[in-house]
Amino acid sequence: MTITGLVGHIGVGVQDAKKVDAEIAAYTPTITNFFVITEESFAAENNPMVAENEIGRGRDRTGAVAGGYAISGGFGGYARTTDLGLLCQMALSNDADSCEPSASTGISTVVPTNYLDFWTIEKNVGDTLYQWLINAKMNSLTISVNQGEIANYTSDWVVTTEKKIESGDASSPSYADDNLLAFHGGLLKLGGTQYNNMESVEIAFNNNLSDDEYTVRPSRFLNDVTEGARTVDLNFNQVFQNANDYANYTYGAVGRTTPGYDLYEDDVYFILMDAQDKADATEYIEFFFPRVMFGGLPVTLASGRIVVSNTGTVLAPNVGNLVTVYYK
Image (cartoon, rainbow, N blue to C red; front, top):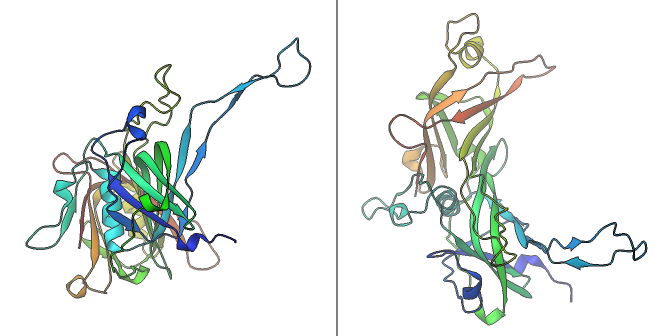
């Protein structure tokens, strides 16, 4: 029988700590959340090390040994509030308690921390192959809102090991009944001013995790996964309509006619919701970036409308958080 992946699933559960080799055999995670996905790419590599070009035993390869075990890949899907909120927690924070929804408002808040949690990912391939991907940290998360489309996300992970399980060990999925979030539910403000000329908005979080921490002992598996320099970038495609935008983004301020030494910085607010107005929305996710630096607006001639790629680099503010995410 041909196997269809449409009956598979991806679930996740947070770990209390990294699991070492000796713990894997007896380890059973608690899988708490499941994602409705459109793509998945986790793949294991044994990375065999082959003895090449040895002289004395002929022209053929004579030996090989197992290399560092690696699992790379991730998953993606359409934007739904609960999924995006949990993904932002995975990408930004190891403080699960502070990310819990408020008892009075039902709103969850995610702010960055310096470290990330390890997670276990449960993977069911067509009700045939079941796996736990253990010691997983999210390396990157990209949320994309494009004109005429349902918003979507992609995630990339670093994983140290995996365990094949039986169907009876796998969890029974349950999913939040969230609405899809589309391009017409997006709203962007720069410096408090609403922009209505954006054809796409992209938020890209990158943790630059290590994926090479192999040590002489104790095993061929990653000894740890360490957080690197965090980067957050905002990428826009906007219809060019105003010469003041060029002066602002390229020269550093409206009114300038030549480049200066200061680049334009401002706060950026973005909401993705299941309505046209927040007051009418039953589900939404908000992002507030208090300090974003823009490097320029590369305007060029085109035969039709002029669409310009604009990138904002998110910087740490003097006071407050790099980003705050609210969702309900």
